[in-house]
Amino acid sequence: MKGMMGGMAGLMKQANQMQMKMKKLQEELATREFSGTSGGGAVTAKVNGENKVLSLTINPEVIKAGDAEMLTDMVISAVNDALKTAKDTSSAEMSKITGGMNLPGF
Image (tube, rainbow, N blue to C red; front, side, top):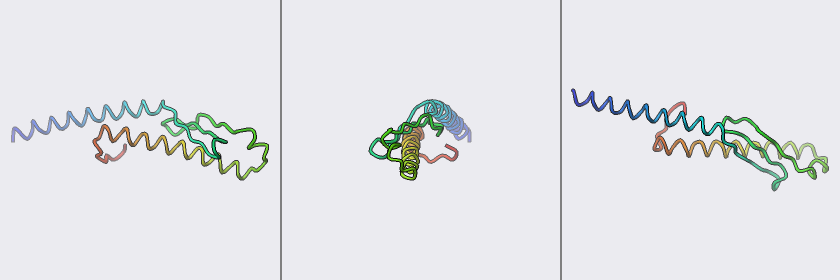
């Protein structure tokens, strides 16, 4: 029984270290910027790791075209592209820490 308790303490220590690494990574990812584009670069969106839009750049030629529906679609597409990049990067970085374990809440 004594050996089992020592093993449990070791597991708890590992879990705490993993949790600290994950928290640090989440803080680091929150400050990183991720870009997405659409329309062959006509629209560029930048988001951070907290899924906040930081900037949106629209080529003036697209605005001159006057197609509001197309522009709306391109903005949505660029933002979604940036958010997907942020999510994929976050998932890949987290799985380096967790070793691919699927942990709830992260």
